[in-house]
Amino acid sequence: MPLLEVRHLVKHYSRGGGLFAPPPSVVRAVDDVSFQIAEGDMFGLVGESGSGKSTTGRCILRLVDPDSGEVLFRGENVLEFSRSRMQLARRDMQIVFQDPYSSLNPRMRAGDIVEEPLIIHRLGSPAERAARVRKLFELVGLEVAHLERYPREFSGGQRQRIGIARALALNPALIVADEPVSALDVSIQAQVIELLLDLRARLRLTYLFIAHDLRLVENICNRVAVMYLGKIVEMGDAEKLFRSPTHPYTQALLSAVPRLDPDAPRTRIEFDASSFRRETPMREIGASHWAAV
Amino acid sequence: MKPLLDVQHLTVTFEPPGSTLTAVDDLSLTIESGETLGLVGESGSGKSVTALAILRLLQPPAKITAGQVSFEGRDLLQVSESEMRAVRGGRISLIFQEPMTALNPTMRVGDQIAEALTSHGIEKDEARQRVGELLEAVRITDAVKRARDYPHQLSGGMRQRVMIAIALACRPPLVIADEPTTALDVTIQAQVLEMLRELKQRFNLALLLITHDFGVIAEMADRVAVMQGGRLVEHGPVRQILREPSHAYTQRLLRAVPGMSRR
Image (cartoon, rainbow over all chains, first blue to last red; front, side, top):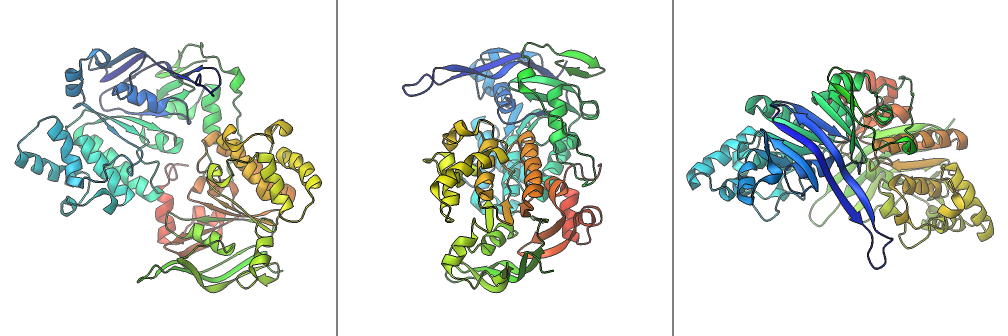
């Protein structure tokens, strides 16, 4: 059984229709999305802005309520969970946000931010919690001496480590990492990525890694799904997908990534958006490789 | 032949009361006409401050404390403010990362492009005519209609094209582009970079391209200068910097680029 299975997930938004707005229209943010993540996977969900990748991640954790579909975590549909059952399920599924500046409460000390999930879930005595927070600080490479500091006293990379420690506090099995390094400088990015990979091995974590940076995803993910306008257009083993992209959008996307070799031939493929058919179903085009073609 | 732009020993300090911080430290660089120099560094390395210093757009407490900026036979740090205004946009233009904040939200984009021309002494009627040509040069189709749009009606990529049209309005020999594609999606970035390459050829532009992305550098730059903590730590031809970086910081930066080791 996969750790996480998303089936026919749908989230539409209607926009417009206000007093001065144009007539209402429907944005198909997530439009019949299905995929599976196996235990231990580093699953990359990639796409450009507006592709629906973040909304998909949020629907899985029910931070956004989807219109329809199923989100099976260890075989159980979390969308049908009661409030209290969902709270319990959140111990197993946590999120790391993109922006370590706005996702941490500026008035709370770093140690309290990491401890808060333990308090909310009523886990451990104060002494046990304090010990756990120290351990988490060490785990993510923060100095225990900085427990009392406020977020603003940390650098961007350190703040993201606080966010990661907080996500790990409840010992989750799945981490939804929504652009976790996009706001960071490249050398800091590399350090945070190294931490995420290290934690994956040490804590046997599974990641849904949401990103727009294809070079990064190619480097760290073992499986990848490419989203375009709310649809997954191609999915498969990372190596296969990056070696032989099949959907015209995937081909265009990969050809747009700047090559790091000034002498590499530039063969950019343009994607003709008018050729996109939402109805085209995914089909298996090779072993562990699907595309909507 | 003398370089188009010759920056020597540029030093910029921030002097808030009671402390001094050196943001740009004894920086020297040159750009030949028609050439693209990539200026790379992480946040706080001083690359944007360098660009603002060249155009004398720094605000207090930032202060240029030493150096020369030779451009077209004069030191820009010595000329009068009114002469400097003619240089900005006329001879050296600046393209920012965020076109939404750089454009005026209450003005039609066509008027903003025309303003770039009229503020440098071109007659209104002629300016209006040139707007269409400029929009076509940055490959905005349906130029007449688009010129009447406000910035919020355009996509991010379109806005950046308008910014580029404004920058090119007076046919300056030098354009400074500060992270021009960082806010854009990768497919839009590819289009904008391709267009910049083409316009460079067509107008024989020199480009000072500020970026943190070595991919953009590899695609665009002839030469590269690497900054760290306000200092230039390494500079040279793009192939040399990407393939055999000699400074430890450049090596570290390149190793941090995902996929660098594999490609």
